Length: 141
Length: 316
Image 1 (tube, rainbow over the protein chains, first blue to last red):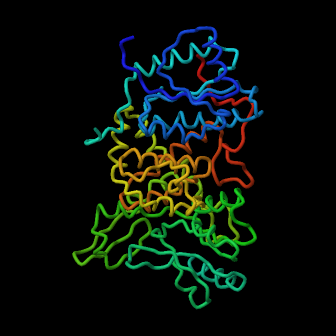
Image 2: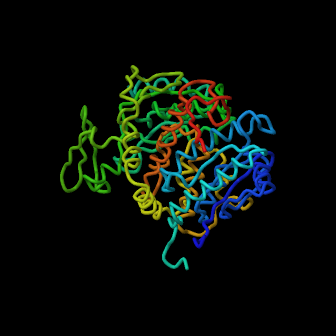
Image 3: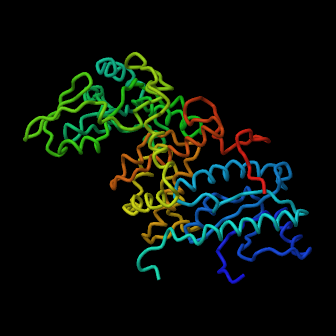
């Protein structure tokens, strides 16, 4: 693991994926540490602009994870999220962010293993894509 | 045709506070919006392929007044979208519809003739002649039409109280804009990033695209200028410009009718419409939705289905 870490932002729903990550931790499941977790009250809280802003500020990847459709703590938040995030996923590559740098998925709080799988695979993909250097300009450093 | 329009406006003006239409601009190649309040001003109204503006932009600001508005097919979609969102009231507006054969892109004209030297313009059936002090240039309408007009699906206003001439048949399914989109989709991700970096670098963040947009109704309360949350720093790097365009396009998702006022208003000539066209294309594919074509439809991002037939989620 000599590789340099990538900056990956994870927006996790408090009621499921955040618990899922916790379950993974309690079960001592190993996964890469590149992903930095931001706890949100619901995947429906994730304004697509939060993802856009993350990329504008130099994130290499962004993952949004919420409750499985049908299991939303607020009944319908993730249904709205699904539509918005799907549109965003189709728009970002058009605007210059490589496909694969943004993903969304569903992980429940009992699915520690699924969280391990998602976090590991997503991190590996971002490492394959390398750092996102789209905004570097002369005089940036 | 223009006589019928003027006559209808003159008649309706008695019940209205004002009528917004097109008049002659500061030179023969520019039309300008005119605001008619008195019957003797009605003769200022004109109609030709230079009437590019989307006059629906004024409606939200003028709410509370009885307003008549002259619209082309594409502009009428903005009116309908504003109505669908409850931003204007149907009983407060009167819509003079003009079935349209396409309007001119002055940027295309500027490639063929020095538009600041044009002294006179005369119209033929499928062409027009621009007279300058250095001679005459004749241009076919087809070659200088705006891209949105090629394959225009709604040349006849979708909502109107008066129609100035016989309806025009749809010309296609928006091929002009779809070509703009697929042109970019064919590039590699790196090329696309380079493309947007090159184009957006010119942006001066004057927000003309926002101010010209008929559906950008927040104006002074725009999230782009808010300090809390401070979405976009004031610095002028490409990423801030990119962020602004993303903000604009995401706030318009499911609302934008593709009228192209953003791109037309842009003083730096940035191809903004193709971003909106891309979103509109995806929304059509995903939710079978087009903004401003049917009455009483909810924008797709303000609703959901328990199972989404078109969304294929990634399986891990």
